[in-house]
Length: 108
Image (cartoon, rainbow, N blue to C red; front, side, top):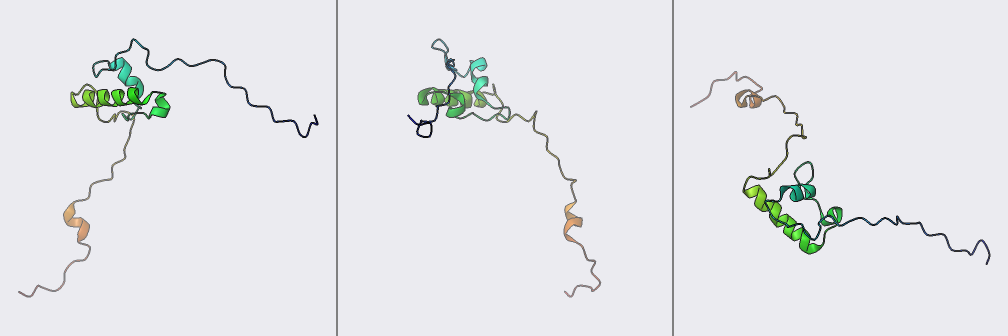
């Protein structure tokens, strides 16, 4: 076979297979905070199924458990520790809109 007609070599994949994120003994429950916290981002968002490598059924159960934990105040709805916001200086409402001074008196 000619070198020019030889097929390109396929990239070698890692032979190490990752273990599933949820083991068979893990119970998906709103009280299992060590399990639930693995599927939440630093900002407090629920990570997608693709990122978590979960099945559809597992993702649904995780989502329900996270929402129940949020409602029962076991988890925050948002994590504000890492988010820094710069607030603008507040301007009083009365001075914001009045730029010109009135020179003529009003006619009633």
